[in-house]
Length: 328
Length: 311
Image 1 (cartoon, rainbow over the protein chains, first blue to last red):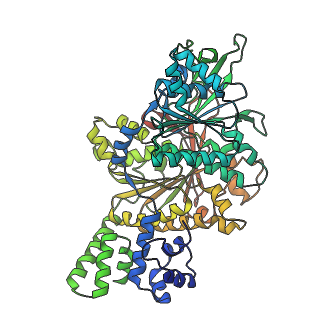
Image 2: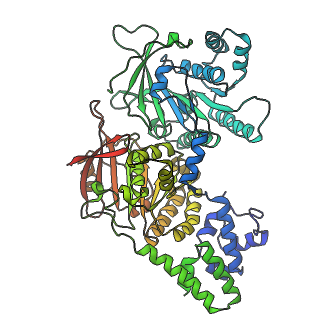
Image 3: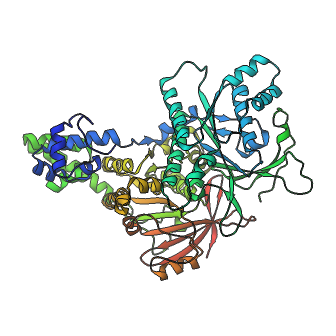
């Protein structure tokens, strides 16, 4: 979208393009914001034709407003809430992962982010019988761990195999490979490839920091622009295809105060709708596999709630007793 | 006569008729009907309320209250309640008069795919005395949502929405959430020249100003605080910014000058960082008179609730 060229829309012939270019009108925006009477006089084109052209271009390139009532009807039927398979996380997420939204799991090294992602993938593939696209950029995904999680849920081998088949793994080690993978997903869904038995309902990106943080830093703006482009791609994918997107992010220290905060900066903080912070439990009684999950951003629940989760038992469906935290 | 046709150009039905008549220049009675139609639409729009007090009495209850034709900017970091405030204002506008609303239409332009319809419905259900499907649907019928994925698409969409403003005289509130969503992408697409980088947003700001003045709307636009806090004051008139740091606000203007010039009110949102309170605060600043007002609010199930004390 941008430059005017022949064939862009009906009525835009090469002659018209040349005449307009002669008067300095090169792009769609130029034509739409120009004074058409003046242009008609200078170019010798008919005013009626120009106005019609303007209308066609606007209809083609601008966005169409939706009525709230229609949108609500559509969302009521298409929005789904997918359980993560971890009861305490589900409580923080207000019943589970919402389709149409991006949820972020952020935490330091060893806090269990990859385990959460694997658990979500296993639960969605086996429990909910839906397809999962798992984009791995940190190398944390191993087939054996997935199998272990599935074996803990069901002893039946066919079910395990079926669930594994529903998880599609893509390894993306830089941002362009990741954008490609997301684009491929779009075209697969658009063509409705009948190879897979179901539709992809969850996209897991583990982790987004691994591909974006090498681009940031210094005075370069390109890194930030690429990050925002990835953000836009993830959000539009979630919205257009009705899927839930889960991303993981690392922690970094603030420059002045040394406090820990989620990485990728302020611009990224606006991207996910929900953010859950995983922390290794502190204090004397914390055993090796205990983690605390804290809700730090949510569009529908007050923030600050904490839940304790035990990674050791995540594989099984029986959960550790969840301790209700006070809003801190 | 000519100027009325120019104005009406954007209203589609009116336009097609005038176009035909230009070409054939026939019966004046039909021409008269067209003119009357335009004039009636324009009049219906001009007779609106002239102040925003009813939209939110807490925010807009002083002498500086914004009038129709004003542009307000909501600025703040993530998680400070800007979008919730927009839902609150939207709910107040689309609720029927019997439930304390204004029964006017709202157009919401979403640039970062952020809008949560289910949350708006929850807020509406909590505010209605009898929340049945029918009433909620009728309220939502007054709400329009547009998604934009780039600043060029935003500009073109504003142009094509002009027809909508013409044809909906009860459309009073325009919301853009958020205007800074394409900031980094625009900066890279514009190459090395700052002018080129800012040109689309500049055109958007100018067109928004034109739309708001011509159709007597109010525009609420959010901008995100994506720049890090400055450790010392660097640019701009030092008096203006020292006021801001006194009020505890972290503001570093980064959008184009054209946008800074069209904004009449700037409202800064922040959240109390201490773990004991769930309170949000906003500082409302009228740019001409330089008055500051601080308000506190909490966010509940039914949306934003203002705390009754004001500092």
